[in-house]
Length: 120
Image 1 (cartoon, rainbow, N blue to C red):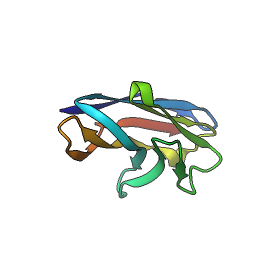
Image 2 (cartoon, rainbow, N blue to C red):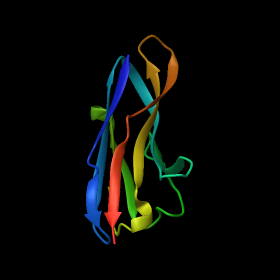
Image 3 (cartoon, rainbow, N blue to C red):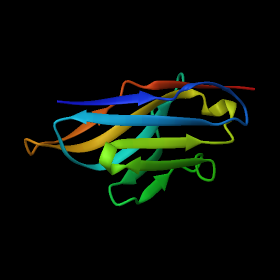
């Protein structure tokens, strides 16, 4: 099947930067959409940013101007560069991908999540 493996989370001071990565592997034919979501304690999971295979991006208002999503189609990897981090960015960040398998099926996959903690 398919796995999404995230990396790059951690503890950072307010104003700092982190770069998240998410690599997809397995029986992949193509990946249309990849994105990042986050879930803070006691809150619902929310969109952070998405990117299509053609490079079209979409950002939550909270991410605009601070975060940049990018992807390497050859590596089936999506990145999230996060700058000017704030304590309210503290959350578990999840990678999401809408993948067409080699079998022809199209499925939605999630990574296991990576913790981002921003201290004040």
